[in-house]
Image (tube, rainbow, N blue to C red; front, top):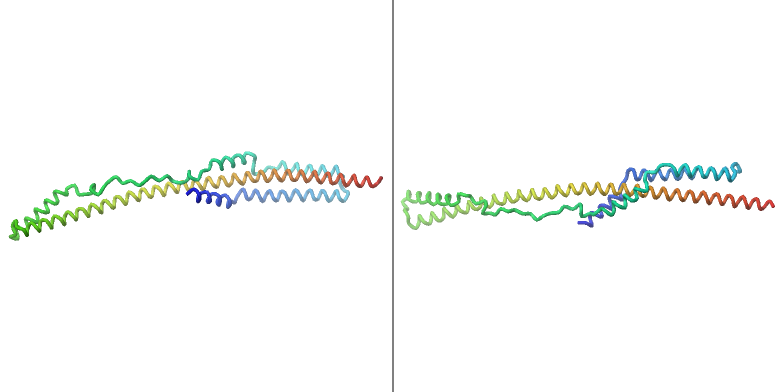
Length: 239
């Protein structure tokens, strides 16, 4: 049963919405906003309204502003997510089922007055036979044998029905206990998988933010060097 649970865990993590997805959209909007501001600064520089130094300072200020904005994820979330994955064991969420046991036997349900009932049945039949003038002959003996056998069969059938009813009741309790326990484990598993999914989103948000911050700083440096090179080339052409 481990494979279906693992598959369920993957599906649950992949379908998570909420704070992690919202963080992603916020992050994307932040990237676009940063790039728009940088583009505006580059346009001013290209128009000669900003010096290289002024442009570099604006780019630096933009990066510092966005780099210090709080993000949803932190470095600790990466470790939390790694630990959650290493500690997750699908088998922990499968109920341990012991074999069904029912200690009673059919004999336990035989009427405790079985012998007395059979004896009384024989006496009643004999009494009835005597009243009918059959006495103790073969006919009376046959009637007694037949009557006691029928009573014995009746008592056994009653015992079997009682045995079956009680055994079925015990098995139903056993089955219900398994289902209830598994339902509890399913709820715990779903909660654990949901929490793991959120931790994964937080870790991803942190990594994405760090990667973007590095990319933005690198691009700003490249733009600065390109502007310097263009300026140096232009100045070289004057001489």
